[in-house]
Image: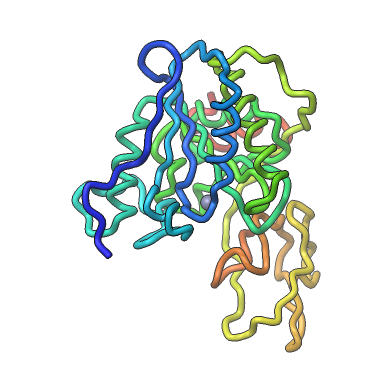
Length: 281
Ligand SMILES: [Zn+2]
């Protein structure tokens, strides 16, 4: 099927030109963000700054598929003239969010606890992520190319497990916290704000092909030691050559990898700034 004249769906609220954006459905099979946005809109809040709400991939959302032609979160900045639907939509999304501080909402198969992903070299993204009530902020630059977060001040959130009520609630809480921190809503701080730890991913954890019996032993964000088994199947166990922190690891989230090898950077935003910005500012 070939889609013509397809664009992201956009709704704007608040006074003046939008200065902030909340993006959902970059992946069409992750409706959590859109449901959280709907809850917020239906509560009729008073927006004090302009906010743009974006459904990034309407055709994949209707089809309830991650993507139709290409994973959008791997083809940024996209191309208006590409044959691939997602490359065209990615280019439009970049245009729509240019200059806007942006929160993008995803869900995962890996972990119920929200995680913020940013790209290094965007100090504003780090600032936004560090102010969210979230336990883990991860720099994805070393492994993931051409993600949305590489295009500007964009923080991508994994809000929780795909299509669970818990994930919708967490997504809503994080969007409200973001809008509150950026002075678009004045609702007060959320009840619970965990201490934030900063990580980066540096490699993929490959899943051996042709064996679907693997069971994951590693737990996300719990360090795997050298020679420790992180997965097992009827054929045996997989042992870590070197220690790593498992990030977004799951049995079923991706076809060819379990997830990512990560390392801890530190427990303060200054640790992360030093590690991830050229000037250390
Ligand atoms: Zn996603």
